[in-house]
Amino acid sequence: MAGIPLSDDYPVRRVPAVTYLLITANVAVYLLSPLSGVATWYGTDMLERACAMELYMLRWAAIPVELLSGEQLTGAAECASADFTKIPWVSSITSMYLHAGVAHLLGNMVYLFVFGPVVEDRLGRVRYLCLYTAAGVLSAYAFAITEAGTEIPLLGASGAISGVLGAYLVVQYRSKVTTLVFLVIPLRLPGWALVATYFVLQYFLYVSTSMVPGSEESGVAYAAHVYGFIVGTVAGLLMHRIRWRSGTRLSDVY
Image (cartoon, rainbow, N blue to C red; front, side, top):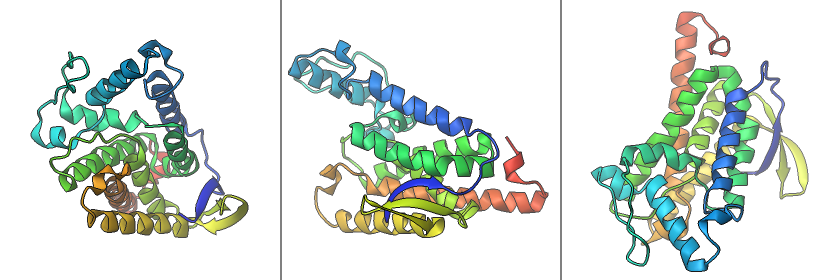
């Protein structure tokens, strides 16, 4: 993307409660997980904490081979065996609230904080939450298909937030977004250009890394970003079509 978005000039007409709840849930889950330094109850010994992190991700993260097979994996030999029952498709939802680190969490939450309120205001709270969840779930499965056979956990809200950006491109592309370019220069840029640049960049990275063997180990699921964005764009277009046919403004629907 061209920079770090700071604010959107669209005047939302109500408190973006769903967006704030999503941000709160993401932050809370991270702080309470063994992936953060706050959750000391998982142990302080390095090996003990590593096992806790592994089992935590096995339980809650989306693992491509599990999503496609519907069968649960077991823990690694050096850790205690997994004593939980996991429903693979449910992990496509829970994985959206997991983050690997502070930078990963903050990066996602910044985009959700800037673009989420606008999309929520334009679509209505229920439709917005459905879009967010659908984009996250479908992007997880799309990633699983592109990386079939891998056991590397997929976690993060990037697929869902990419869906929000895709919907933003449709429902409020006329906005101006104050953006920190090169981390130091604040500029007001067209919202449509900002999100379109995001998609082009993610698509380029997805295509380029897919040509490199073992690229799924890079730590970034570009495929999930691309497919999440497409889901959000299609959903936004469909909702606008419904709006024009029914004569009802989506922003009035909760």
